[in-house]
Image (cartoon, rainbow, N blue to C red; front, side):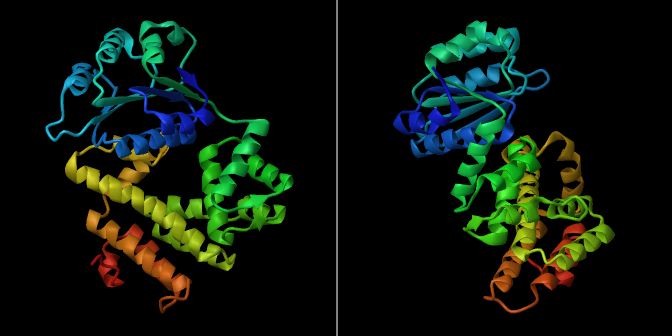
Length: 345
């Protein structure tokens, strides 16, 4: 059964299918669709999660073993197969057909794939998925559909704007929904839940000749201490709201905490990069940042951000800009955490 993205929530709420094929080249919508299926699957008792990434010489027998095995703890299994090319090859095609023909009700399979071409839609493996489960193709948004998506996204944060404001936002992100989501997070952090004027949006997204929080984030990940301080003081001079900076800091720190934890446990980073939708071009800089600190140190900086947030809201005592500068310095050089008493408890 093939569904449009807008039909997914109602379909999943009504009944879980045994298999979902989520395909496309728009990462934000694809990721959020898969997240929703995961959430409902966990609520239905599919608690034992296994994730496979088809890359290199992938052993398809792993998928067979996962789909035909039973959990030792009477939990049902959520099995995820990441198929970047949307082409499983001859061996993979046969395995997918086999597991779908005999898939137990104790297993739910999600196949997360790249953009599907016309030829693939005529294959036996694809038709088998269509027969047994749900096929969802995610497309980039343009024109009126992009405007509607932006309006809905603003509403989820308690925000709204007129058509001029929506157009300014749409023009600034050029169809990149991940960038749009980040801009909306910034707007909410800056203004709260309000109706935004076109000038409010223009002021937030117009960064042609100035530093912004994304420039700061890049400087932090690179460990460039001099540039970080310069960018941060420029943002302070522009009177950028501190919650916007803290939002950017926390976003990067959460990725590093996840990566650090994965390094200690499985030694892999693929799942974390996928979860946080990190672009391929930025993976190297995250790995470089990761090598500078420990899991405990990154967690300590998250706690320090929470402290700075309390100060910015008037709940705690201190200078929020001084705290943020100390956090940024410790981000570049984690050994400074103890110097500034930014230690995880």
